[in-house]
Image (cartoon, rainbow over all chains, first blue to last red; front, side):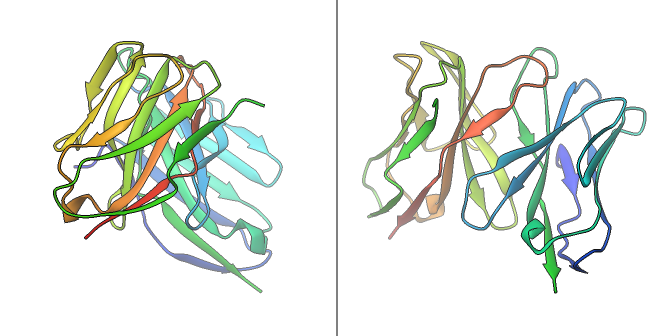
Length: 111
Length: 113
């Protein structure tokens, strides 16, 4: 079983839609959680960190459920420019700060 | 501005050749990582380093080696390139610690023929 699991999609949504991505992780000792965005043929870039209390950045909301080992990302009012692959990342377990990536979820926003 | 750069951006090499991919960061980060990215597999860890003279094997380290002689650089060497090593390679660095971001280089697209 892969350490970080994501639904690969693709999620194909119209502009203005709300879309949610989920991610599960297997290492209960993990302490740091992130969502990264990767555009085609480009490097991954941090979208947002995910905190236990949940956090919001504009149209993006991230949630963490430690009990269920589950992370989510909600995108409201989708824009064409949101089309990308969204990577769930987990790290910081047992003193190891190695980012471990899910395979990514592809989002396509169409007019 | 601090950055992390990889070179070359594209490389074509022949089976059996030794190839070295460069990674240089000016963040002064202790932690550096090499990943490969392939369709259906996502980013997989090859090697990583927590500081000068420290190197560790990752999930897919066979056929690869790294060295860390200074803080800024972590070159990745393919000892004898194989077609299975055709991939996109990403280098990353981070300061370490909770909730610290990893910064990525632009990637190197390697083709082994």
